[in-house]
Every structure is written in structure tokens, then in C-alpha cells.
Length: 118
Length: 169
Length: 142
Image 1 (cartoon, rainbow over the protein chains, first blue to last red):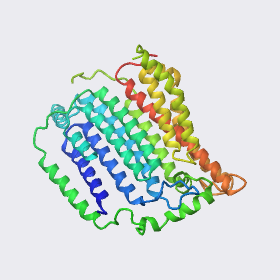
Image 2: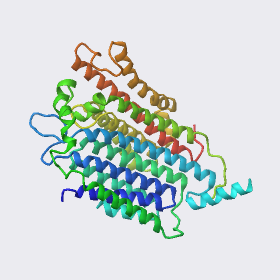
Image 3: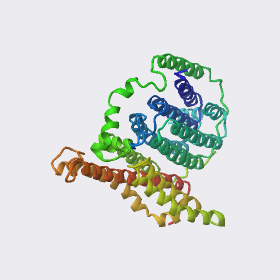
Image 4: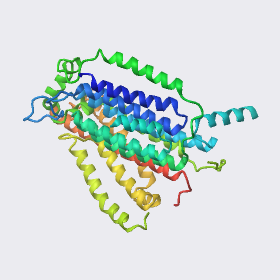
């Protein structure tokens, strides 16, 4: 059962991907994207763990530590993820004000109507 | 547990409950990260993912004020694409090392140097902080700039007052 | 919400502890879990709590807009400034070894200032994004 962590990660990632591409609501797409990003954090952190080791803070009473390198990468990734979410939500707010809806089908229909009328 | 939450997020149409479920999902992810010995990352995920993300989503929902519409056609093609991607990923990860394998390449290249020399070279016991601020300091500079750019971008997008454009739901 | 007694008292009671905890996380980031990002987010969360309970204009009086906007840039400038200080002292960009009389103290000093810069930027950006979202729906009362 050595690959169980990978299977959980893949299920979460695929579910997030499905929510992103299958739902037409813009806010739900962003939520699906953030779920997909969170599962990628798990994908990076799981291989760094050693059973019986402790957190990577050097102290005299511990001998083995978990790998600190994925932690550094994922710290950056989390902050960049929330930055992306903030910008995406700002765009959704502006789209709502310009087109009156946040459903993808209605926005595209309205856009086509405006292009035909112009 | 998290799988149940994600399926619920996919099925739910009330956006407020979707946001709350996402907050719960972030907290569970932070708990899993503590179990994986990633304490710094867990603190960041709990505060940023479950705190700031939820606040921003609620703020956007307050401005947008809608619920998800009923899907007009059955999403068969996206489901097949997702399952295809999942199968490809499972096939790819079968070749990766098993969980907690001390001889995996991730533990043998540069990590032992960081763990052994961080306290001696930088005087900081928290190896993650030492690597983040000193060994990989350029990456953190880029990240600070990304955060600043996001803030500037949101200010640029949302600065002026809302004009009266058809206040329909 | 500012008419509810329980919320008012609890929010005013929590804020100093949250800010103290943020400072603790910031300065003990070298000895335990923590660091600049977490501390910045906790500071932003404390001020957001105040803004949610007492209203955005009260939070604006507490932390004026000009200060938040300049803090966004000052944090990144502190970080880049540490790099330039490394250049001025004779090393490479972002070289901490030359910042003090011996390399280990130079590293500690560099790491300290870098984390302070990151915390300032993160806290002010999170607060600014929240106030942008919160003030978009209606005209802000000044």
C-alpha cells in the first residue's frame, strides 16, 4: 500500500479538475481550481515525510527529520494560490457588473448579442 | 473525508455552502499536513487557505449575489476527460517511490546538506525558515513581488465606484 | 453588527491577543513554526475582524488607506533593500554573509529583516484586497 497517498491526491485533483471544467458558474470554477491546487500541495508534501521522523526544526533530542525542501516550495505555492484567487474574484466581480450574470452560457450569449448589435 | 467534501462541493448549487465546504476542506488539509510533519505549511494553509480565501470568497459572493444555475446539458465529456486524466496520473505515479522510503532521490540529494548545515551556517534552528529566507532567498523575493502584484491588480480592477450598469440578478 | 454587545466586546477583547500572537509567530519563526507569511496573515485577520464587526469606516480610521497602500510597497522595498545592502557591503546581491562582523550574525540579521519585509507586504496586501471587495458594493462613507 505504498502508493495510497498518491491515489488520494489524484482523486482530489481529478475532482477539482472536473469542477473547474464541467460547471459553468465562474465562482465555482475558481473554487474547483483552488481544490486542484490544494491537492497538488499534498502531492508534494507526502513524499517528503519519513515515518518516525519529526518536523524539520533542528533540536538536540531528535535524530531524523522530514525533508524541508517540499515545505519551502509549498509555502510559496500557497501564497501564490491565494493571490491568484483574489485576482480571479476581482475579475468575476467586474464581469458580473458588465454582463449581469456569472454563468458562462449567459455571458457568452450576452456577448454574442452585443457583438451582433454593434 | 476530504473526498466526500469535494464531491459535495461539486454537487452543491448554493454558493454559500460551497464556500463553507471549501473552508472545511482547507482545515482538513491543514490537519493532514501536520500529520505529515509540515508544521510551517500547515500554519500557512490554515491561515491563508481557510481564513483569507474564505473571506475573499464571501466578499465576492456579497458583490455577485447569485446561485449556480441548473446545468443545461449533462457534462459527459468533461467527466470522461477528468477520468482519463486520472487514469493517466495513476499510471504515472505507479513508478514513483513508495511512501516514506528513505532511499528515495528526494532525501539523498540536497536535503541532507540543508538539514546538517543550516544551524551551523545560518544560526537558525528552523530549517524551513533558513532555506526560505537564506538558501532560496531569491524565490521568496519573487513571491513577495507576486503578492504585491496581486494587491496592485485588485486595486486596479476594483478601484472606482460601481457604475449603474443594469442591476439585474 | 456593531449594535450586538457580545460581538463588540469579544472583537475588542480578541484583537490585542491576535496582534500579540502575530508578533510572536513573526519573531519566533526562526525557533519554531512560523515566519513572515503567517504573521502577516494573522495581522490582516485581526484588522479584518475589527472591520467586519465595527464597519469599514471604523477600520479605515484605525488604519488609514494611505498607510496600507504605502506598506504594500515598503515591504517589498525592505526585502530588495537587504539585497542592495549586501551589494554595498561588498558581496553579491542578497548575500547575507557580509552584513555583520561574522557570517553567522550576518545571516541572522539578513533573515530577520527579510521576514519583516515579507510580513509587512503580506499583511497590507490582504487587508487592502479585503477592503477593496468590501467597499465596492456601496459608496464609502468618509
